[in-house]
Image 1 (cartoon, rainbow, N blue to C red):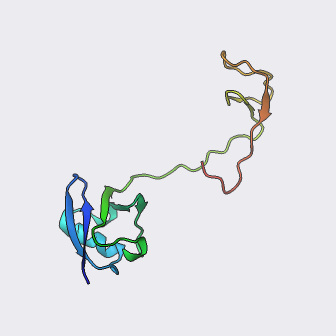
Image 2 (cartoon, rainbow, N blue to C red):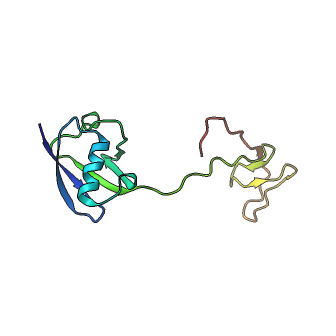
Image 3 (tube, helix red, strand yellow):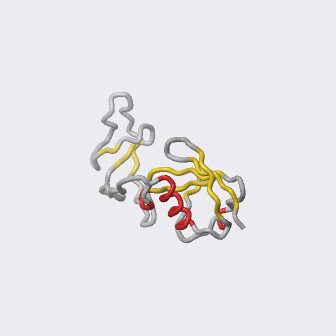
Length: 128
């Protein structure tokens, strides 16, 4: 049973697609690639601010007749990971400046506070 859903394209056009609830996201991307000439690897599909992942069906995301899916470009690049700092650095409670271990006052002219604390260690599962 085919349903009509809407696709908001990269150039702000709205097109209609005939799909069934059991259509997978991969199949939907193939349909979009044929209609809009956008490579499958460069497609990012969003529905209600949630990115549609391959391997799921439209019914899994609650996409029904009349729903609108947004087509976006994929984001290039990747992250550099977490930068680990020396755990013995100090921080000021007021301005959060990072200071060397032997500091007694803040180095910033506006602060000059002596309310120092040790930097917190990052947990292994922590992502910044």
